[in-house]
Amino acid sequence: MLEFQLFRLKVFPTTQVNLFIDEMSRTQVLSTVIISLPDVELKFGSVWHIGNVSEVDHDSLYFRLGRTTKSTVEMYKNGNFVDEPFEVAPYTHVIVDAKLEIAAIARKPRLSPTTKGIVNALVRLLNESKEGMRINAKFEIGEISDPEEFVSHLSTAYSVSKFWVSFSKPNPFDANIDFVQPMQKLLRETDGEEGKTEVKGLTLKPEILQEVARSAAATGDNAGATLQLEQEGKKIKKTLRQNPVIVTQEDITETEDKLTLLERIRKVYRRIRGRNVQ
Image (cartoon, rainbow, N blue to C red; front, side, top):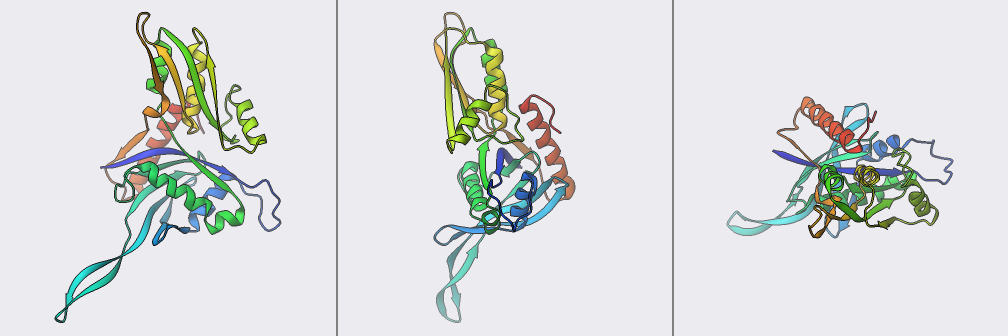
């Protein structure tokens, strides 16, 4: 059984004029870089690659992500013990919806103890790829969290006394709610990478906080709250990132398997955003 974790893959095309590059959409930028089969040596002797790229549907790609390392194996040949060099290439499966800018990455302990480790390699691979640098695009990847449990705590708690949310650079696709947009604009204008804002009060309005939490979940950002579940209860802390989004799939060999997984991923993402996504 394959376990796919969902991540938000943000694309930021260059704002500089490049006379040799036609104006490209974010979807085109992402697809172009992936199809170029980039590779990069992230550690000495360890090269990460994208390979086996194929189209799942008009907006989505399947590929394999892995790394190659050289090793030796002890052999016995013609009366002698020798060390024979060979190459090891563990890989995992990835499906990217370039239009929604979401990536589903299969867990693979041989590549990294955590899926986040694989993601860190992928974002460096995209940013340091020859095609990505030629286009002068930048990529960011954030963990998508399932907001349902966190939102439920906000809506049923006796009181919420503190709430914070992290935010990243604005992406036109997100069309974030009014409360988040000014913070994202500040981050962009100051050339920042990430930020965080916090509000405190005796009893914060849960309806607004739920909306902000869903926005953070969908964009790969984080949120947290200090709340009191019952009138006489102790104050506790809850965070959005406690609930990664996992989608399982028995097999992904056939095109039909990939299409099935893709539709399930899209359905989950629409639920997280809390509104219809085309």
